[in-house]
Image (tube, rainbow, N blue to C red; front, side, top):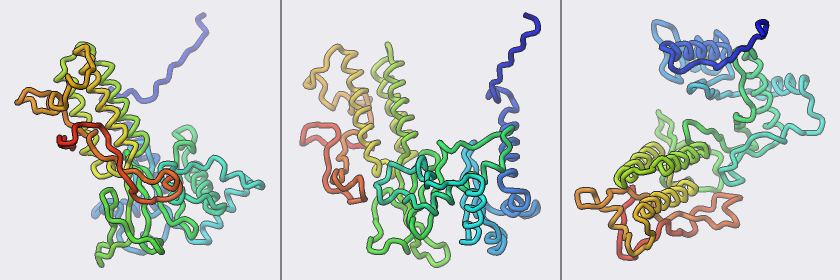
Length: 350
């Protein structure tokens, strides 16, 4: 009928020439809405002499407002607040006046980082949870619904306080846990791959340690990439399949580097995926008999007649004692092997 209306709204179409500009402009508007104009110009510095990234002109400017760091990565926003006891109490009270919580139900549904052992996660103390919820509510209220809104389910607010010694965050595929040295009472600082020492620039003293892992989203993305390679390799040559595997593997390892060693799930997944790729090649030859496919077939360089596959599955996977590792970080108690091969062969991994 001629009086019927139908509107399809797609959001911003990626292919438009100036889509990236429009997006950046929108992003800038959102940044200004969240920070407020004064704080935004303090973070940016004067037009004649802009500040370095995450740096302020002087200590006074830095400490006079609770927002100490702000950065936005496309559509993810990272903010570091530092509240005085008074500010925190005030914010929590404003929040609880609008959203009273007589049964302490705020703790229910508060996101936590399940990938860390229990004692490394955020401890859901009433005060900290209320502060987290109040901060989120405050920021959410600064954004008009017509422009955009932030989503509680996808967000995580980590509170560092007297009850919570860890600061947890995830960024660009990494899960990060920062623990200051002053909160490691009886623990000795760990020195291993995947743990960074953060030091004070002027005194060179190690003040905190950052523990790295690969986040679940990134693990899923890698798994799906390998599944895609297997699905789309209909009549592809074996070299092609091996090459695609090499590209994905190098991409993963050069991006995450030492974080991979700390994340058991990734090591397990690498073993699983490498097996799948090899099985795909074996099925292409209509046989899966192990004696017909010694590792030399796959891992020998192309110049010498192999497939030139790179391996990451022939590693020892560090294991922690299952009973305690869910609760606390026990360290490595034993290893299990990833992919099996003859004892006397050494298959290098990335």
